[in-house]
Length: 147
Image 1 (cartoon, helix red, strand yellow):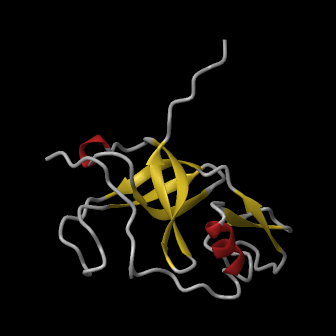
Image 2 (image 1 turned 30 degrees about the vertical axis):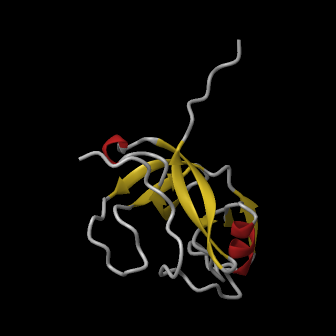
């Protein structure tokens, strides 16, 4: 079965609730930026946002901007919605972001039949409601070498 045009969800979809620790992430999301934390002591990438480094427990974390490029690690296709807020089908996924962390997102901008493990993706943010912007992964356009 081919389903063209997987799309972002809108409305009252379940989502993480912003906290003081994650506030910079959500503010950046509203601007279309993907932020992650890096420990200033051991250089470990920390995502999702945290108060202490997950590797060394140091409290010195800085925010960095991601290139928003990623590779598809795993996905599924949902045809039976778990809440009336979702429009089916949708394709939740885990992606490996190039800066060294994984992100849970949904794939958009392609058909279910065209999703492939290892496909290159570009993360973009879409307005859901209020001030909420969620990350979605769209197949990346192939880059062409300059001549």
